[in-house]
Amino acid sequence: MAANDVIKKLQIYHTLYRLNVSFSNIFKHCQALRDAGIVTAKQVRLFQGYTQELQAEINEGVLAILYDVELDDWSKFGKVRQAEDKRLEDPDDVFIHAKERQQELKKKSKR
Image (tube, rainbow, N blue to C red; front, side):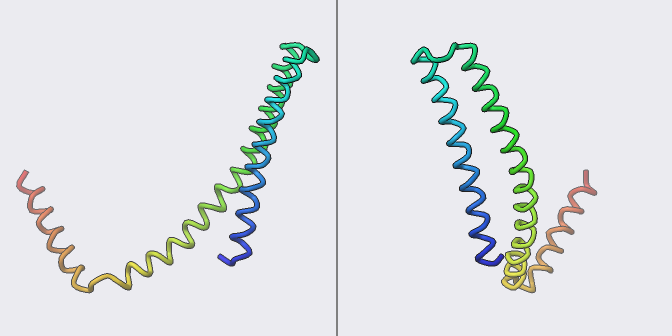
């Protein structure tokens, strides 16, 4: 991933965080208006419900997209790790694994 993509992803997550903080503030400020006697408890429940509904809708939409992005990145960058693991692998490991598999099969056939 290019450095630009990393920065873009950070900005998206940071923006989502800031949106959620803002929704939390709206929720609390509605309670403050109720405490001040400006709005009724029923109005506060309504406003908070609208707030939480919109918050959930935005989160769901953004996170659905980010899920796909993260899955693609995991796949892409997992190949980097897999290539390094393969490079570090001892060529004789194949024989060790084959012997272990033969022993497993012998145990299964004895049952």
